[in-house]
Length: 208
Image 1 (cartoon, rainbow, N blue to C red):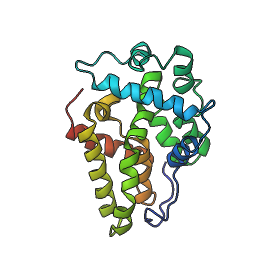
Image 2: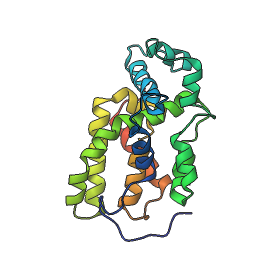
Image 3: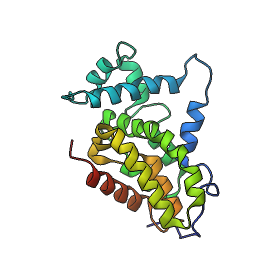
Image 4: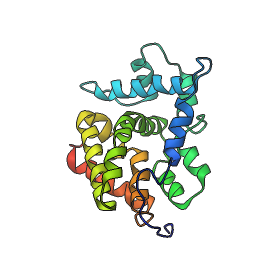
């Protein structure tokens, strides 16, 4: 089941998505005391370092801690990832309750906390590319042109971050999945958008 189609919208018109609100809410905290976003960043950066290691060790929570260079510990890792993680991206999508948000959440509902961490790391890593899309999407002449701009940005990101992009079966950043669905005004469901972008990455990158 998908949401009822609506008229395609421009990037400015569809406003903050669920994942965008999640990123902006957490990253806007300026206090250094118990700043959960800063804790998340420790592990996002560690995940990138681990995946970029050649040969890459198995992505386990212990290896993530090693890659954190002494800045992490088991308790804070599980505050960021896992079934009891605080402020997780998947929980945000589920709480939104819309059909497409639930569909996207189900695509990113992981039993492995390291995979959950990598999903969030992809959003964090892709975020500067997503921000740079605004002007190009505003100038796009329809949803197909906008989707091509989004795909180009995703492939540029993947080319610069191939290990991260290929991790967890080439799962795309969840924010890109939301954007693709919204660009098409609900005519592409969250499930379909995730599949299309996963296939795009899989076709562009070698298997890890």
